[in-house]
Amino acid sequence: MPVIKASIKDLRKSAKHRAANRIEKDRFKTAFKDIIKLAQEKNFAEFKVKLPVVTSLIDKAAKNHLLHKNNASNKKARLARLLAAHAA
Image (cartoon, rainbow, N blue to C red; front, side, top):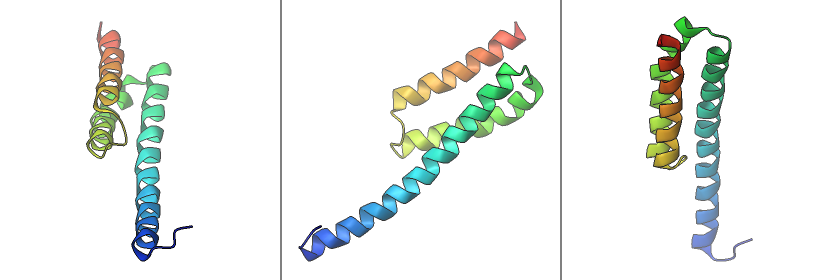
Protein backbone atom coordinates (compact mmCIF):
# COMPACT_ATOMS: atom_id res chain seq x y z
CA MET A 1 0.00 0.00 0.00
CA PRO A 2 1.23 3.49 -0.80
CA VAL A 3 2.24 5.81 2.01
CA ILE A 4 2.62 9.09 0.15
CA LYS A 5 -0.57 11.12 -0.13
CA ALA A 6 -0.29 11.59 -3.91
CA SER A 7 0.28 7.86 -4.38
CA ILE A 8 -2.84 7.09 -2.36
CA LYS A 9 -4.82 9.41 -4.65
CA ASP A 10 -3.26 7.77 -7.73
CA LEU A 11 -4.28 4.35 -6.43
CA ARG A 12 -7.87 5.55 -6.03
CA LYS A 13 -7.85 7.08 -9.49
CA SER A 14 -6.39 4.00 -11.17
CA ALA A 15 -9.00 1.79 -9.48
CA LYS A 16 -11.77 3.99 -10.93
CA HIS A 17 -10.18 3.94 -14.38
CA ARG A 18 -9.73 0.17 -14.23
CA ALA A 19 -13.41 -0.32 -13.38
CA ALA A 20 -14.52 1.94 -16.24
CA ASN A 21 -12.15 0.26 -18.70
CA ARG A 22 -13.37 -3.20 -17.72
CA ILE A 23 -16.98 -2.19 -18.32
CA GLU A 24 -16.16 -0.83 -21.78
CA LYS A 25 -14.01 -3.83 -22.69
CA ASP A 26 -16.70 -6.27 -21.54
CA ARG A 27 -19.34 -4.40 -23.54
CA PHE A 28 -17.18 -4.61 -26.67
CA LYS A 29 -16.25 -8.27 -26.17
CA THR A 30 -19.87 -9.32 -25.63
CA ALA A 31 -21.07 -7.47 -28.72
CA PHE A 32 -18.26 -8.97 -30.82
CA LYS A 33 -19.03 -12.50 -29.64
CA ASP A 34 -22.74 -11.98 -30.33
CA ILE A 35 -22.18 -10.79 -33.89
CA ILE A 36 -19.80 -13.68 -34.63
CA LYS A 37 -22.47 -16.04 -33.32
CA LEU A 38 -25.02 -14.45 -35.68
CA ALA A 39 -22.69 -15.11 -38.61
CA GLN A 40 -22.21 -18.73 -37.57
CA GLU A 41 -25.99 -19.15 -37.35
CA LYS A 42 -26.30 -17.59 -40.85
CA ASN A 43 -28.55 -14.84 -39.47
CA PHE A 44 -27.20 -12.14 -41.78
CA ALA A 45 -30.27 -9.89 -41.62
CA GLU A 46 -29.60 -9.19 -37.95
CA PHE A 47 -25.83 -9.25 -38.61
CA LYS A 48 -26.19 -6.28 -41.00
CA VAL A 49 -28.21 -4.36 -38.41
CA LYS A 50 -25.70 -4.91 -35.60
CA LEU A 51 -22.55 -4.41 -37.70
CA PRO A 52 -22.42 -0.58 -37.41
CA VAL A 53 -22.97 -0.79 -33.64
CA VAL A 54 -20.18 -3.31 -33.14
CA THR A 55 -17.85 -1.41 -35.48
CA SER A 56 -18.46 1.71 -33.42
CA LEU A 57 -17.68 -0.16 -30.19
CA ILE A 58 -14.45 -1.49 -31.74
CA ASP A 59 -13.42 2.03 -32.77
CA LYS A 60 -14.18 3.40 -29.30
CA ALA A 61 -12.17 0.63 -27.66
CA ALA A 62 -9.21 1.41 -29.92
CA LYS A 63 -9.55 5.14 -29.28
CA ASN A 64 -9.44 4.57 -25.52
CA HIS A 65 -6.47 2.18 -25.86
CA LEU A 66 -8.44 -0.84 -24.71
CA LEU A 67 -7.47 -2.48 -28.01
CA HIS A 68 -4.44 -1.89 -30.18
CA LYS A 69 -5.41 -0.02 -33.34
CA ASN A 70 -4.18 -2.87 -35.55
CA ASN A 71 -6.16 -5.41 -33.51
CA ALA A 72 -9.26 -3.25 -33.94
CA SER A 73 -8.64 -3.04 -37.67
CA ASN A 74 -8.25 -6.83 -37.89
CA LYS A 75 -11.53 -7.36 -36.05
CA LYS A 76 -13.39 -4.97 -38.36
CA ALA A 77 -11.84 -6.66 -41.41
CA ARG A 78 -12.93 -10.05 -40.09
CA LEU A 79 -16.52 -8.83 -39.83
CA ALA A 80 -16.34 -7.36 -43.33
CA ARG A 81 -15.03 -10.69 -44.68
CA LEU A 82 -17.92 -12.54 -43.05
CA LEU A 83 -20.40 -10.16 -44.67
CA ALA A 84 -18.66 -10.38 -48.06
CA ALA A 85 -18.61 -14.19 -47.90
CA HIS A 86 -22.36 -14.16 -47.36
CA ALA A 87 -22.94 -11.74 -50.25
CA ALA A 88 -20.87 -13.87 -52.65
